[in-house]
Length: 460
Image (cartoon, rainbow, N blue to C red; front, side):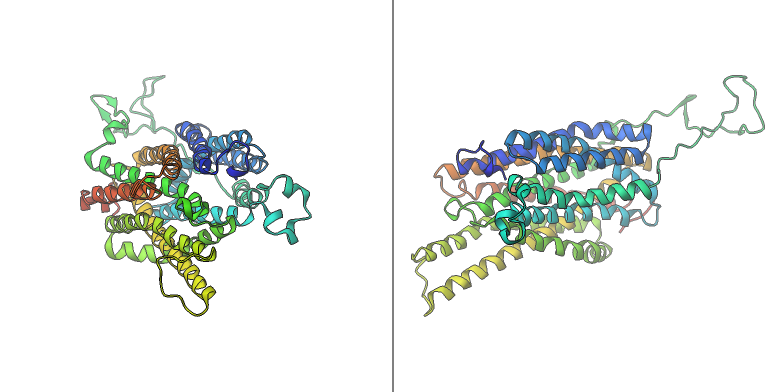
């Protein structure tokens, strides 16, 4: 998409401008994250969510009408403003759940995120510029030639439309403010009534109500380790998610795979199928057997080699490109049918790529879902769940701002300069691997007590 705008003068600068586009969304989301929550406390969860869905629907369609980089930046930023209410969803889930099903319901949130992230990327890759990708089907629609990115945005907005309809007709307000219980005497008359309790139910400290816990008071050593682990993991994932499409689309000579937009979409669509099984079937069984903390550590551990191994696929892609050009690579013995050997290498490239992507999505499900549960587990009371989830959401949003910028800038720098390994096209991937390794090391420092819900409900 960015490559089609006139702002890109050099193909090697695509990753930088793509990073800016993603960063604009995350910056606006971070700005509004701390405002949507208090707004939902004043006017209710339902109207807040409906406002966010309506704004998201409108701005996403406008984004599909992008014909210039400036328009894409503006509409994507507006889309980020309305995405800041994602933390309100956690409050709704916590309010409609009870102690018997809250863990399972909270685990559905990362499932929806994973499905949306993977399926959305696949839809974008498969349906972008449909008039040229599928001329026999969409070639006669002038609007799709004028706006080549409108179709994937329209398809993606169908889920938002469905959510908006469900919210309008099915979602009930979950914020219930209980009336205050009258104290021993009323403030107006100073006289006790029959409804006045003999003992005040309001928590007191020296005759005054207990103050609300501040954010700093929640930052215990365990909380700091959990938040830092989550922060480093989200940074590595944000950098990896940003660089993979660019890596796949880059030429093998620049350390990429040389894939088309359609190939990238196909590679990502496989993960969208796998995440359903992993989240709904495999993860609950693994948590029951090994515990939340161990699952988190396993996820972080297996994602570390994934990032390190991914850039080596470019060697195989270069081999295919050299053979198609009539050159030999590594002087391997050639079979009788030259083209069959190229076909074999091409199949191996896809097998290894899909295998690595499955490793990545497995680690993502294990680590991301477990950390969501750990954040809830370490909250000292249910009254602080919103604050803890807000801190986690703010941290994740902030790293999604810097992550794309870091990975895009480093990728552009590494392929522009002839530098040796590991500072070549492998550098971004190695950095992601190191961040994930540090995150895994920090998770080993967490006590087993984080497996227990602090408000009294035990989780395995």
